[in-house]
Every structure is written in structure tokens, then in C-alpha cells.
Image 1 (cartoon, one colour):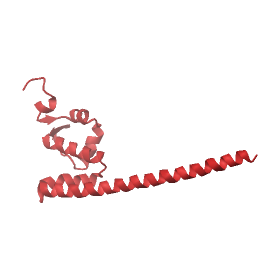
Image 2: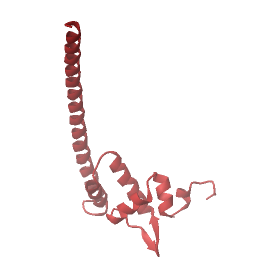
Image 3: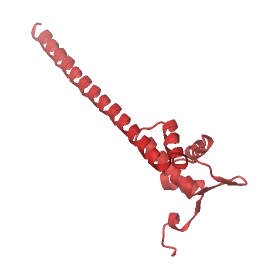
Image 4: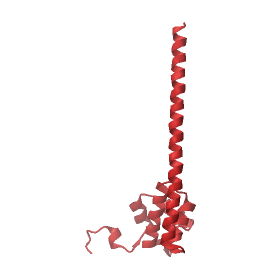
Length: 137
């Protein structure tokens, strides 16, 4: 491998600083996920050494957070990969969670649309009432 390759391709381990920079998160965020047991870096004295498994799990955690999954759901999904029913069970469960999340977001969108429509109606009434008050003077 040449030195022009990204550090992620050269390294088999990463420091907390490298992962934080790569995923644009704080050290505190990574330590929080470690405290929750979502990632388990090797400890060499006071230094955390992250392996490919930790890096992959961190990427999955962050992706799950971006699409709105709570950490307990992310834990369930990630842990299923290593346990029975394995990857197929993990993917089935994930599809169920995606469907539930999508339904929730679609309902929220419908609620927002309805609220915007109601606000528009109230706004129109207020403007009409204000105009009537101004012309009656």
C-alpha cells in the first residue's frame, strides 16, 4: 500500500480522534456509545484502540441516529447480526422498523400539512376581520 491511500485503508485500528474526525462526531459521543456498550474498543492503558468491528458499529449507530432510530433499537438491530437469527433476522427486523418509522413520519407529515392548512384558514379570517375593522372606522 502506498502512503497516498486514505488512513482507513491502511489502518486496521483507529484512535478515538481518527474516528471522531472521520465521522464528524465528538470524542464525547464515541465515549457515550462505549459507555452504553454499543462499541467496545480495546484499552491499552488509557488509550482506546478501535478495530474494524467498532468502526463498522459506529457507522451503523450514526446511520441509525440520522434516520431517527432510538439507541435501544439500534442496539437490537446491531446485536442481532452476532446472534441468532443472524443477518437474515437482523434484516427482517430492520425492515419492520423502517416500515414503522416511515409510517410515523408520513403521519407527522399529514399532521403538519393539516396544521398548515388550519393556520392558513385562521390567518385568512384574521386578515378579513382586521380589514373589516379598518373599514368600519
